[in-house]
Image 1: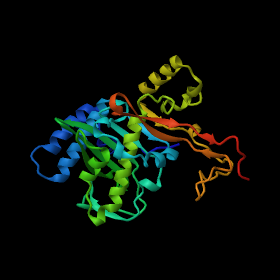
Image 2: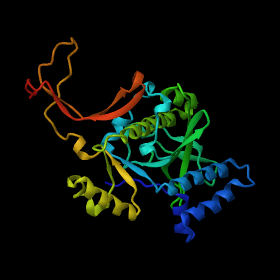
Image 3: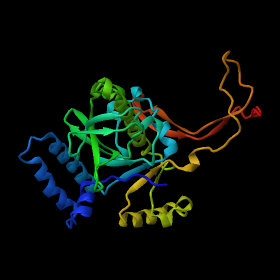
Length: 322
């Protein structure tokens, strides 16, 4: 399965300008150029993107491939019950890249959108109906009493020469405010922006759920080892896995696969309704598919963790409907 990787400023420079410096030196030189002596909003935002990418490289370029069958489930998470202070990026990394493999209904624009785009030669760039996020870069930035989540999103708008126009938005997280309310406080309610903000809303849900799942759910998130280890990795003991992970990191892979094919069911006996319109007891067994579920715990049930509920047969004492 292929996922869209993040096209960094450094990647583009290496390909088209034969960049020979290491990422650290490249960003040191270019961030100073972009942020010094200019009031151009486009250049300032591109400079901010450079700051995020610089930190991402310093962290080892952590990335998370989200299984396509899981995107729909994660994008339905209820943010209203999750306090902003409980939010964390996966594995507590300060900056991460989350990747997708293709379109998903909840992350696809249902109308064309025209807006500012980083890297575009003109001020406005149009995203057509059906555009979807390929890859996103996210930074969790502490700001004293609150935090800011900064998102850069690649919608696959090709500007030529491998350069993709990138959209930016941010959310302010304040103590005592739910993630849902934090999003609504930052939401641009302009009618022409509704389609975009629906996608951004679902993106926040996906990022939040992946962050929760990365803590204490090793069966749900596997390290993205080199291809030669993929068949062996699921059967290996922990010591052998650590060797494969170490060798993969030495080759530049520092990512995780969120979800796998074993968590989802293929063709199954016909599902019955949980109950009919009269609320009467089930007459047939049915399959409840695997799904993520939020559990509260700790003092005052103030902490939240996400666990994957495995597929189960409901009312196994009953026959499946023919």
